[in-house]
Amino acid sequence: MNRRGELLRKHRGEFFLLAILVSLAVLDLLVLLDIPVLRQYGAFAFYTLVPGILLLYLLNLDRLRLVEKVTLSVGLSFATVTFLVF
Image (cartoon, rainbow, N blue to C red):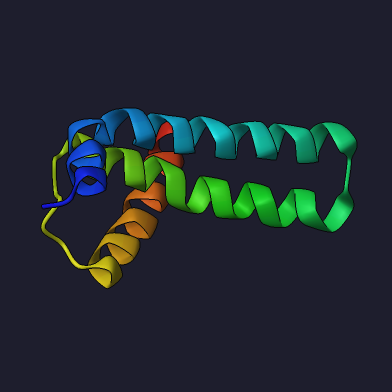
């Protein structure tokens, strides 16, 4: 395994947290700048993917393929946001 692969494997949680925080900062910037279309699409994409991705990360489901991860993260996001809001 090369050095970059070892670095990514060793600090996977830190890179994951950084990616979530950067996407949250971009969403906050879109809301604060009040860009109409990008604000709605950004919030929809964020709340459709991020809660499910966080749950998949917490459940440690790393061996899933990309299609399975996206499908599960969307389903888990809808369920989580629905149960937490209502």
